Length: 132
Image 1 (tube, one colour):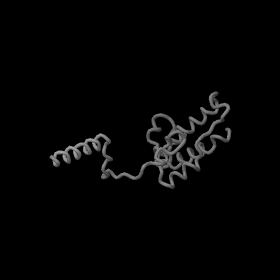
Image 2 (tube, rainbow, N blue to C red):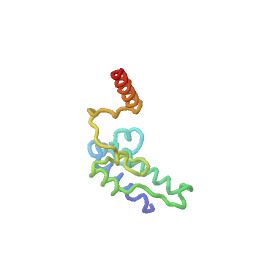
Image 3 (spheres, rainbow, N blue to C red):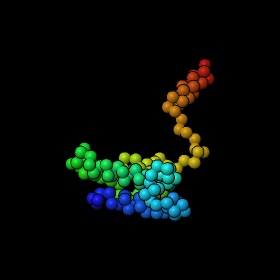
Image 4 (cartoon, rainbow, N blue to C red):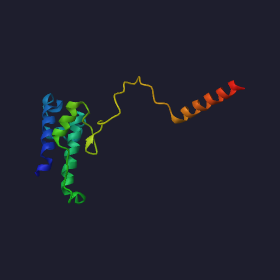
């Protein structure tokens, strides 16, 4: 196997070995990757499976022939997991990296620009009414 998919393959193998499907239920790793048991895998293992499939597919994709197959490296995934940015992937980057900030559900939403304009208009109308 070319070196472009080795890290993801190793990460998938490690994730499978640590999963409940292999450790508790004593299924083989190959059985855990097949349809009846694949739904019981953790989300991270399912994402590694998808990334590994995309990497293998990218090796024969003619559109990527000149640029080469550029998979996500496992080290980058570990760094994002340790920094707390999340491990879900979107276009080769963490899905939650670079967000606006932490929200706990108690934050107020920013007022809409139309509401601000209406409030400004009401204040001007009230000031004009007070002058009369």
